[in-house]
Length: 307
Image (spheres, rainbow, N blue to C red):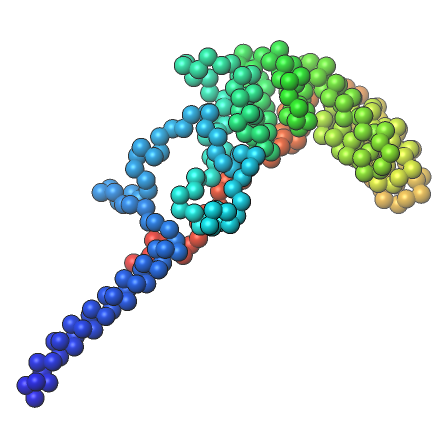
């Protein structure tokens, strides 16, 4: 009986050691799956040391904006499993850096936009630069008219050039938007209907009446899809002067063309003959390239355990 009582503490001690070892093993396995846990400071906040959150200059080029993004599975793992991977780009911070003229930076806004597009050549970079130009539409001191013209002539991306021309039109200069519409209209003479439709879509996005004048002849195109896109271009860029063109298609043999023609004529009838001779900021805002989405939250199972 004495031996049995003496062995109870020993058994309890052994059981405690076993549970501790099992818990350590499970915690180590979870830590390996979720990556390193951020250190917690004396104030209860978690994250990297303050030095890691220092403000990054505008010249910083995040990998998500690079033309060559990391490929999943490269270098022995996927990007989502690499604990040392750079964080997702902060669109708001990049835009703020782009639009800030620092006292120790001798570049003007034209130079900053050109440098930004060199460092961020992808679609995300075009979207951020376009938003920056739109935000400066009413600030000709920071982005003067001659800078818009120089950027338009120097750049190659059609979306960015369209935004530059539209901002110039908002300021009262239609020369760039008329030039851009003429350049987009070269595809209207393409042999394939698909290419003609692409040109009509580009014209519609200008939201300027000069595009409607160029799209009007394709209302007589033999391809029904081209006729429908020509009507859409008329609705997006035309005014009351183009009502009669849409009404002529009310007797078109295709029912979808007749329906859209009635709808377009009704909308254009509500506009004046001077509408869309100068860009409106709301219409331009609707045609801006979409900004990149914010980074998604991490997996829930890798967060701090409850309790």
